[in-house]
Amino acid sequence: MILMEQRTLGRTGRDVSVVGQGTWQLGGDWGEVEENDAFDVLDAAVASGVTFFDTADVYGDGRSEQLIGRYLKNRPDADVFVATKMGRRADQLPENYVLDNFRTWNDRSRAHLGVDTLDLVQLHCPPSGVYSSDAVYDALDTLVDEQRIAAYAVSVETCAEALTAIARPGVASVQIILNPFRLKPLDEVLPAAAAAGVGVIARVPLASGLLSGKYTANTVFGPDDHRTYNRHGEAFDQGETFSGIDYATGIAAAAEFAALAPEGATPAQTALRWIIQQPGVTSVIPGARSVEQARANAAAASLPPLPQATLDAVRELYDRSIRPEVHDRW
Image (cartoon, rainbow, N blue to C red; front, side, top):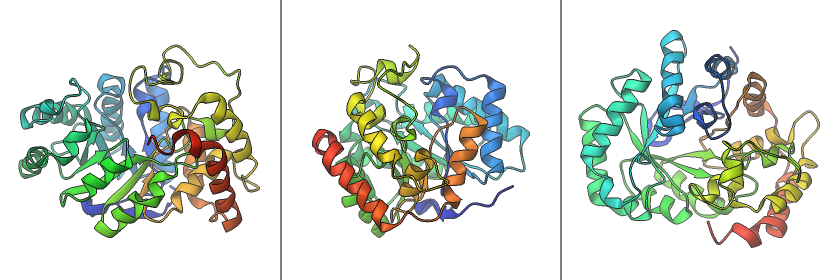
């Protein structure tokens, strides 16, 4: 088993690998993945040093959680910290974020994952008002007292939401979209999280695959792939698909980004390496639908830091091509 750098995940006090394994792909919305293939992906990640899985109770209507639960039951030697999410199983209204619903959602996730206490539960990009509700945090504290969850956190869409949550003393970590096409969190969120001792989990690190450099203007995604049906936010927040960037704009910028990859690294690995070395980031959670992808993602942790010239080039590309379209929106 390969050893990977570990960082403390904020107020959980637990160490996790700097490259984690996102498992949205294993549940759905990216095309079908067979169960044995999913187990192979998780196994490849663990063998590559990954000690952190991120999932949610709505990925494949719980399939992602179930797969992780079955995998870890068969791999008791795998020391993996599992973060899940809750809140998207009900209409997105602040009044649905109450203790009774939390208990119901938690019970379902605990059954799927085969544990008595969930390592970490994140509010799953709820309505903005939820982040400032005292009653919501009181309910989350109750779940900790009841030992249903060991810690709680938030997954957010905007920097303002992140900053509101970071100010709460019980919030262990913040999950936010961060990649070379989404730089706004660098300005305020990462410094505030670091000052508060809150972990940062970077999601959508490859801008839904754009930063891999593999797609063209003619690429066709399947009808069950969110990159087909959610390009303009038809099903959920637009930022979750291509980081909210117009596809044609993203393809052109991705071609420029690919040219920045150092020798021996792919564009995707370069994007992951860029995220890893941002001060305040705890872990980045790329997804994978194949063993090869899982191994390549994990290998980004062992790449040397990108030089300042590359960091400057990323900023220049963002300011010129991406910022005018998405910066203020997110």
